[in-house]
Length: 458
Image (tube, one colour):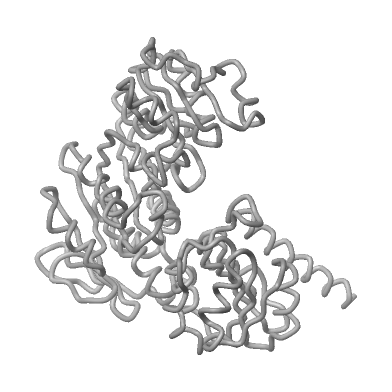
């Protein structure tokens, strides 16, 4: 566990007791802080019983700060009641990333790498962690990827912390000076929480505005205008990455070949086509970012490329679960918006597409151009009607009440050479606790199918 001696003797409120909040309570308590912890869900209050304090009734003038879990609304659709209370009492709002930053002076010498963007964050985070360890250094991965940063064990000298940071976390964080900060891409997302797309972009940009350390590096995807604007606005060292254009300076991938233009000349480093779990332009962007990080850390080109070849991929992100009778089953449950689903739909042909859930998008008509890749669509959840209405003329589709029934129908229709793809383009919250549970359900159903077929062949 990471502890922050700077918080000794301070009184900190913690609201929101999921993974991030619970680990924050434990870390702050171990740091010597007095903690008042609360959650609206009584069951979530159980793990931190000793630190419980009803923050709605608490005197906020006694708090040095209020630490919010990322899921707590800060500004939209309206500020949470405790956010309003904090504003009235001039109580600082912080995140667990702020506590980590306060802990850094007491940690052994290290490097902090942070990744943000609309899509590809988790894959890039895991890829960078894999690369670091394959190149002989120690890494600890945390943040939005599912492990609270304060629950990580402190690394020995020379270790590298790799954090995936969401716009929600960045909106809350007051000071985190990443040594290497990465922006992969920006497209509209989470507008319900940020109010406007401009606010969402500003939250992402904050990662780079907080880079006040010694010789920080910003790695920016410049294949969208927002990335280009942010790159042009920064004063620190910027390394551009692209998969859509050749760059005179930076790292780019063209037709699967990675080029290093960070020095005086552009060098062809090698092909990514042999890296099984880094296929498609979206993964090439992830690889370009990871490569730039590796070079900043002093790794050789050869070692980096070898680590890419051995990368096992990410669970729930274009994860091949099984192949049965020539039909491939792919779990892409992490595609919680249409842009993420687009990357999967571009990666396969002869698709039986299972999609739906709770929609972030107000329309799916922009997916029409990809429907020639889809043989049949199977729509589920709250968004089923919207998907069917928007794409009904472009693809044969049917609505189903559950993931299991949609999968059964896809299995019945699929032929050898086809791909059954769960890429929902929606959140899972209407039928599942989160995208992980949805992906696990899909994987479980496929594994049951595999076992039943093995049993019938004996």
